Image (cartoon, rainbow, N blue to C red; front, side):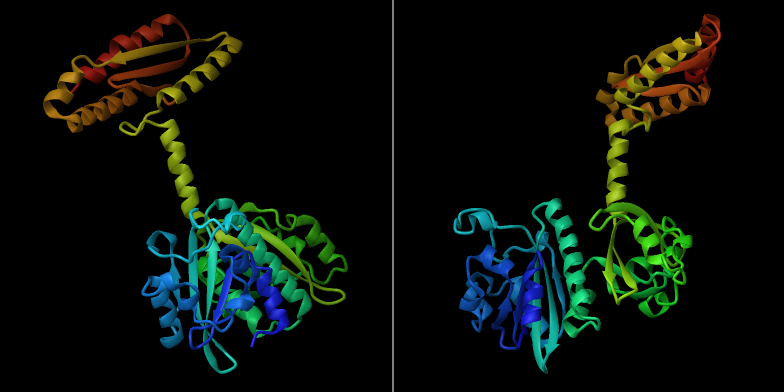
Length: 396
């Protein structure tokens, strides 16, 4: 049922691959499963999957296998929702069953092969981000091996190409898109039929369209010299169908197509949520969560830079500490929400009387600190203190 080439291909994948026949018996699985289950493929072939792993009975995995075999429905099982997972362990401790199982993300897809209803179970070890990144490179290598050996993609290649969770786009030395998998269609927002009439540099600005001149004798050399090295990941920006920028993590691969031409593969994933998290962490590290002002650490950093600058320019600067009297009474009697409202109001008023070049921060609980730069003389600082700040607090 599974020929030698296909078996060789799935053995190179850095993920668990199990193929079940229509009776739910193991048709084959790859060497990744051998190493992490402690069971050999030859010993379990033809055995019902629930006999191999009895604890899966009545689990979400069991129900998803049933849906794939009998209802032709795929399932994606996230690690957070899996109460029961495959008993798979790090290959170095596979014989020590008291150790914690690897964290798994599972994809179960129906597959019709040789007029038989089958299903393919893909198990990804997501125990660390490093493993996820290696999985991306492994999938890239796997596709490279297949395309170099078979000029016409066979059924198994198309299945893998269409089911991988990483976006893949294939283009030629003119930059013309030749093929794209469903994951790429989802990120770009354009179906494959329409994508095949477009150019890769229309969607990724960092790819200069002048690189892609298929009529030039050295076009492939020029492209290869300007693309990132194989396996080297970098961040780029993709423009979706609406022209909106989408941050992506990208790697490229080059596949010989015939004696003179090459095909180019771009592997990418949407990192929008990752970027949002990074921005959130950045703001948490530099800004006060209540007032939105700089926090103490950021203020000290800016103060050091300002002192060095003013020393070089022989100019003056001033620093004001502003303390709210009896603020503790507000928190104790009216609650922290009222206290936060006052802190926001104070921050807003001080910002109104400060200039754009000045730096305002929340120093501690009820303390603020204001840095006035480029002061011509001491009197101008006193004026700010007597008139500006007083007006901010006395005005209604």
